[in-house]
Image (cartoon, rainbow, N blue to C red; front, side, top):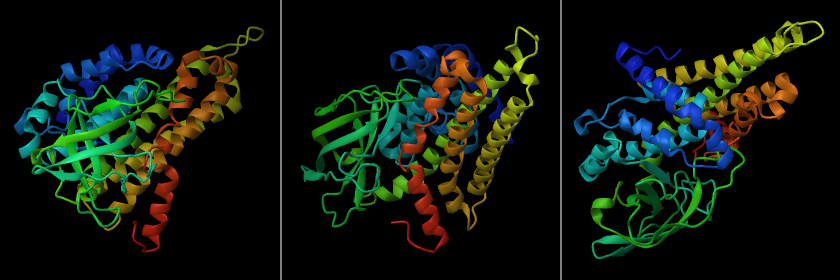
Length: 383
């Protein structure tokens, strides 16, 4: 459905090989131990996929959203914790690429698999309203000092670079934010809690504290007070498309696991497989249709982004809600269709069931997306 050209398909084939050899075999352990998937992320870096959206001029692959979606779909099928870490890295890299004169070293390092990025937008005080940070930068010595209590930072303490939002020093209203590049070794940066999520247990989405972190002007990734423009115009499309692709990948994994169970498990008294029960065949058919529908919607959004029209913004707002709700429904059906085997942990279906629920509460949450969609349809401002 992604309609990739030959060059794009080669990239996806590389990602598939890494997913099969390095990512999938670690998924159960990553979930069971809540362990950060160092090996899988390292494998993505080793073959140059951490540079997927790094400009070619900086040594990267220079790929766009269509290839990114197909790659994340594949990675999400094998380990959604790894996929979410990878997505947040791609979001961070997109923000770097919007200010290449300031971030060329980080872009080149990412292309070489030596730099992992992430976003640090959400704050304890503003919760899921990532567009309205509570913290405020303080002007000092030609730069700023930043103190902030960041919540749910994917790859907390593991990422090398953090795209951090904060109110601009002269901000007069909540939307006047600025974005800065904070590095892991900057003085005053620390992880301030543990991650114990229901799903995506390996993505290290922990809170972080920034305490009077000194940042020079060269670390600014947006014009003063214009952080929202970068959040919405650069980071949000990548996050929306990527989240949808991961959700579709989770749904696809659930479909395949359910088919595998239904076609191999048997009743000993009749020797019939579970697939010979029409009720269960109907469930797997429903799962297939829902997954295909969500992937088709994602492909339509990609088309619209490549040829923008009056409905493009609306489609971008819709895509994460459509795909994540589909993944929740599909994994729920998988649990029902596979019954006690799934509840007992067989085939990884229970993990997929939990992982599918994580993206629906990631900002912008599904409820917020529906509100934004309703506002757009009614001709109201989003903020």
